[in-house]
Image (cartoon, rainbow, N blue to C red):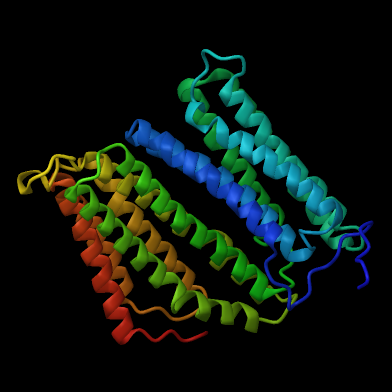
Amino acid sequence: MSRVPRSRPVLVEEAHRATTFEIFFDLVLVFALTRLIGFMAESLRPLTLFQGLLLLLWFWYAWSCYTWLGSLVRADVGLVRAGMTVAMAAIFVAALVIPDAWQREGGAVSPPLTLAVAYTAVRALHLALMLYSSTDNPQYRRQVRRFAVSTSLAWIPLFLGALLGGTAQTVLWTVAFLVDFGGGRIATAASFGEVRSGSHFAERHGLVLIIVLGESLLSAGAGAAASSISLAVLMAAVFGFAATTCLWWLYFVDAAPAAAKALIAAPQRTRRRQQLASDAYTLAHLPLVAGVVYFALGIHSVLARVPDQPGPEHLGGPALGWTAAAALFGGAALYLTGRYLFLRLTVHPAPGQLVAIGVLVLLVPAARILPAMAAVGLLTVCLAILVLHERLTCSLRIE
């Protein structure tokens, strides 16, 4: 069998599929999300939820940039593979310091500064690999140069925030993300590259989402580990599993295949395919992934609250509270919002999906006063009804 030359980037072909190396890259991202959930669970406050969202945006944007790179050139070949391996190591280091991302005292190293250096390395490596991949594409090389301006400017508030700490750190890191993402999107005219294989691009997003859903079960297990196994804990865990299954069904059974057909049907190197990839996948999948992260945080909180004493009088557990209820029901609502946007940009979704989103949001005040297990049971019932409704009535039509 002939070997692929390693001195030049290898362009992706239309029939290309996700590789084990790319799945490995996804697993490192999901490890970071696991650490992120643990960070928010340690101090379940609105500020912590926002800080967690901010870090989630960073990691998602970095993952998206490398996914776009892998849609143009093979990620598992030559210098691209070597560069992405180093980027994975940087993401891994960043993930390790997430729990102390806003702590400046103690230790031999500064966690905020370590996180800033690691993230800068991830983004700088991406720019270098983009430049390497643009060898025979002058238009793409010009796009890379414009893209590099906003990326480099974002490093200024990133490092300033790491050095100042406190509220200034949160504000400056928010500015850093807005400059990096907003400037990059403007510089690249809302498209981060070329999608040479629609099926590969859709598959990458589906794979990372299924891994994140699996991670939500791991988080549920972590919450259960804080208590002795009892009937109440087992019942709450089963409710969490059933709710996760509903989230899986709502994306993978009908939505993902129909949307992938729309992306594949769009001709290669056309504005239509680039726009679908940028909006329906890069943007709309952010609330999908973020929704699962907050949903997992909510399940973790439920299982940590469910008492481990035996007896029916202990089955309910204490009230869930505002923050945990917002994470649990708001996370599910955010997931459904991402799914609606995803379908709206690719196929014709049923208007009833907006009703389901509204119902979950309206249930947050009620869920905060319910016992923890009752709250997760209520969410599971709502999601199961939506699944049943779509099973009986949903018909997705490609635009």
